[in-house]
Structure formats: C-alpha cells, structure tokens
Image (cartoon, one colour):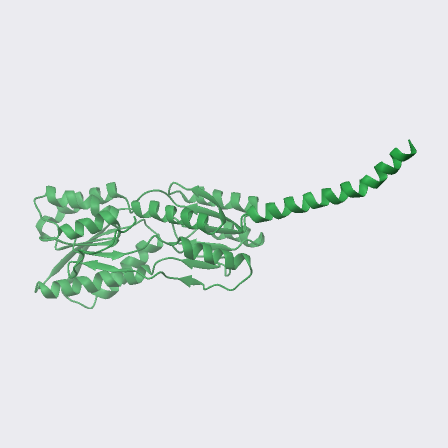
Length: 328
C-alpha cells in the first residue's frame, strides 16, 4: 500500500509533464492551422459576370493567402449589407470589407465598426460619409478616368469619321452609385469642350442586362437613326442593348458607335466582331490587394487610403487578335 502511494506520487509529475507537452503540441498544431486573419466581406450581388468574377477572385486569393473569409451576398439591397456588417461586428472579425450598392447611408453602421475597433475596407465602389475615419482604405477603379478614356476615344473616333454633329445617348449604372456618378462626370467633362458633342438623353439601366435592353428599346423608338453614339456604363447593359439596336434595322459598331466599360470576355469578343467600338477596362481582380491590405491593417501597419489597379483600354484602333483570355 505504501509503495503504491509512492508510485502514484512519483508518476504524477510525469503525467503532468506529459499533459503539458501534449497540450503544448496541441496549441502549436492549432496555431499552425488557425487562419492568419478573419475577414468579413459583403458583396453587393451577383448581377453580372464582372461581379461574379470579383467574388471568385476574392475567394481564391483568400484561400491562397491563408485568410478565413466570411462571405455574404446582399442581393443588391443596402439593408442586407448593413445587416451583414453588423453580423461581422458581432462575430468580432479582424477586418470588414464590402462593395457598397450606393454611396450614402452607411455612417451609423460604420461608426459601430469603428467603436468595435474593426477596420473597414471598401472594395470596388466608394461611399460618402459625414464622419472622418470610418474607412481605412478604398480598393477600386478610377471610375472618373474610365469616363475620361471613353470621352477621349469618342473625340478621336468623331475626328476620324469627320463628324460634324455627334448625338449621344447614355445608359447609366445604378443611381447614386460611385461608378455611375464618376463615369458620367469623367465622360461629360471630357466631351464638354467639343461643340460637336450633344448628349440627347441619359437613362438609368441599373448595371443590368435586362434594363439595358429596355433602355435601348425606348431610345431607338424615340430617336431611331438620329443616334450616333451609345455610351453604356457597363458591359451587361451594352450586351442587352445590342439586339435592340439590330431589331431596329441599325448596325451597332457601324451605324452607331458603341462605347462600353468593364472589359469582360463576352464584350471583348463582340468588340472583335465589330459590334462594339471601344471597351474601357474596369478589372474585378482586386482580391490580392484586399488580402494584402487587410493583413497590414490587422498588424497595425499604415495603408494607402486609395488603391487604384492598373487598367487597360480596348478599341477598334488596336489589333486584339493576341489578347489573352479575360478571366471574367
């Protein structure tokens, strides 16, 4: 009995050491496999190939970067995005990112994120806020410059065709969204100094293919052959508009100059066919910049307030035969 007690007492330290070693190994193993960062991302919807490409790229880069991604799709509703951001706050994610459906109406929920000590990144679109310091970084295209490039192309095209008057119809994106406002501003500012340029009407297509078709049908019925140019704020609306132009007996790309923005594969293919004249790129491949920026924010590092990716320009002025697949 006495020996049994001694043996138990002698074995107890060994048991504690073994337990500590096993616990330590378990902790190291857990640390090894635990994500470097927990990122909550609210995507505004799935309305286009561009948006789907953007989501896929973010998912891919998160997996490659060791980032745990909480993804929520908002179905193009601001209230859904606000609810998603509040869930991210409750879950205590490290960083919140979202692509806002509209510019305004975010202050309250972003103040909640700030009070929780969670940095916020805007992806693709920008917002307007009344308070400072709610957003750590905006990663997205220079939408104003996209409009400028579209306008500059149109001026060159009008010169090459020796056009005396240029009647333009514009199909805009989602009302009050950053790309809608800035693409329009960049385009208008660029063509305003050219007296030949006349924007006869702007209609809202909401960045949707179906709405692009509806808008173009209305415009063809109202103006018909008087339309010289269609400036469309994205490829989806452009692709919706083209059949309506053809149904009216007009040849897109020849009888009417077609200018689009995004640079998706389908639009580039149609550009090569000659039915679109110009496509300004707006790349959805923002995933790596998002992961890199989120990691810096978690580590307390300084980040740039605005990050614009390099973007390309495609038109009938170029040889596009060797252009690589677009990936979206």
